[in-house]
Figure: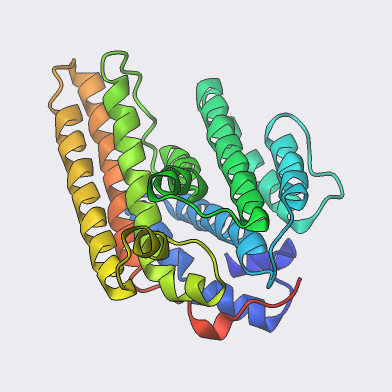
Amino acid sequence: MLAWARDLGLVVDAFEEKRLLAMRLGELAELMAPDARDADLELTAQWAAFICLVDDRFDRSGADVRPEEVASLFARLMNVITGGHAGSGSAIEQALDDLWRRTAPRMSAQWQERFVADYRDFALATQEEAAGRIEGVSVRLNDYVLQRRRTITALPMADILECTARAPRPDLPLGEILVKALRQAAADVAGWTNDLASAEDDLREVRDNLVTVLSCERGCSLPSAREQVTAMRDDRVRDFHTLAASLTAMALPGAEREEVRRYVAALGSFVAATLQWLSVTHRFDARWAPRPM
């Protein structure tokens, strides 16, 4: 993964290389897709690196990024996955072009449309977040929860796991509401656990975080807010498992039942991997202080 990132220019010096290694994304990939082949594990880790480094482009620049800068980058990235190409674009564009060429041809047209829709929604949410920072808007708790579900990039990563874990999303007209709810629960677990892990980093950089937003709205201390967010997260994990059990209990023919089982198991690995990885990653350590871009 490091060689791939270095070759594409995603990391340009020893500092960035050390930080990327400290993220332990190879370990995350193994946790998310424990039965995947080596090539698929590599692809999973590279997608995770791309997602983290795009996020860091905004969160670790040392200053608020203008919404038009966010819009410009995502317009170029969306072009890559909607029929355009990276050409002589930035390293980020070249990386996405490489990943997309190695992923999309393996998947159905429906999957490609869903990934594009999920990534576009992430892009829009990130632009909205950037605009809110510039305008100094105070975020309400309920609004933050909905926005975090979109900015965590969990749904696009879950789409990638359909490919690398070889567990495509089943076509269940009668179970579509359950599948959507399961994906939302997985995204919430990822977002809220991420906020618990990054709370100190976000506080240093004056970024919204579920812990600080809850503390402000409920007028409680940060330690109390952290306890409440942990309880919220744990409840959401239980929601996920309840939904997973409901999906796997559906009366379906054998082949469809196996498709559902594989998909639910893949999302279960995603949730478990998120919980474990965010407890061991050094992505948010203070030594990786933001540097001006």
